[in-house]
Amino acid sequence: MHAIVIAAQGGPEVLEYVERPDPTPAAGEVVVDVAASGVNFIDIYHRSGAYPLPLPTVIGSEGAGVVSAVGVDTAGVAVGDTVAWASYLGSYAEKAVVPAAQVVPVPEAVPADLAAAVMLQGMTAQYLTHSTHEVKPGETVLVHAGAGGMGQLLIQIAKLRGAKVIATTSTAAKEKLAREAGADEVLRYDDFADALRGKVDVVYDGVGATTFDGGLKVLRRRGLMALYGAASGPVPPVDPQRLNAAGSLFLTRPKLADHIAERDELLWRASDLFGWIASGELNVNVSQRYPLAEAARAQEDLAARRTTGKLLLVP
Ligand SMILES: NC(=O)c1ccc[n+]([C@@H]2O[C@H](COP(=O)([O-])OP(=O)(O)OC[C@H]3O[C@@H](n4cnc5c(N)ncnc54)[C@H](OP(=O)(O)O)[C@@H]3O)[C@@H](O)[C@H]2O)c1
Image 1 (tube, rainbow, N blue to C red):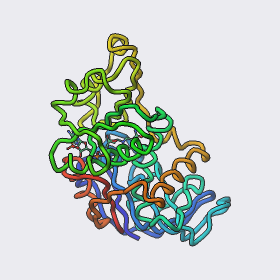
Image 2 (image 1 turned 135 degrees about the horizontal axis):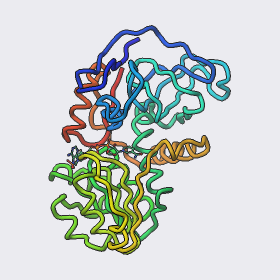
Image 3 (image 1 turned 30 degrees about the horizontal axis):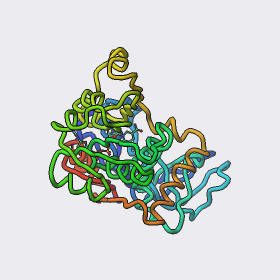
Image 4 (image 1 turned 120 degrees about the vertical axis):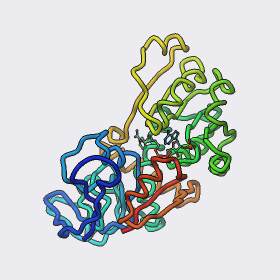
């Protein structure tokens, strides 16, 4: 089988498309013939060294496909099942080894590639709107990078929950996509802090360095800053006194792994997404599909802000 392997962390050139022996599952593991693998910022951090990893390794953190082999102690998963997973390394490959406890069954109404497309960003958007904060009708939420993979999902799910959604984007073309996803208002990064001062209940910020300070300004008294990413770079250390001065604000820096560690939670979040896709309530915008061998180009496009919606690698 072919896979994208890194032997050292570094630039996109460390992503090598290589042939490897087909994997065999150990106890508790299944092998999945990958239909599609999602491309995410965390893959870039795994590649660059921002997140250290034991090497060499296949990278890629979400995928879906058909189970082709099972080890012992994998009750509930059988050869031929269509499954999906997130937060487990090794999806940039024709065959991935995944713990049975981390795969979820994909219902027939959901194509495997769409399942792959929503496991990481979709479950993140689900936990941000249902657990980090339960978005309620009438609330105003701000979603940065509204045309991005996370952004388009967050906008739609916050709208499903009845919120007023304001988004930011860098260009008019991206603004159009954010509006199509359901944003009630779309602003540029230079404008939002003044335009929204004191009006927002929750800020969903995956951009980080360039947006964080403005986000604190737009929150209402006792509002919540959900800082879930750092597409523009990490936010420098924050003095807690700033939260006090800005109106007893809440600040959290959540991650997906802590929201799907319990199997019940994993199944709840995945089944919410599959249900919304099947009912037509959630439109998953897969904007680009790259051959697996072109993983480096996909990562470069994502990091350089050239993309919108979801990127998939197809073996
Ligand atoms: N914590 C979690 O559980 C979790 C899970 C999934 C993703 N994330 C994080 O969510 C963030 C978004 O991920 P995504 O995959 O959905 O990416 P994305 O939003 O599709 O792409 C990033 C977007 O951020 C905006 N951006 C603003 N400044 C940027 C800069 N200097 N460089 C690059 N992009 C910039 C760009 O949109 P504009 O051109 O419109 O500004 C760009 O398209 C990432 O930080 C990721 O790590 C966190």
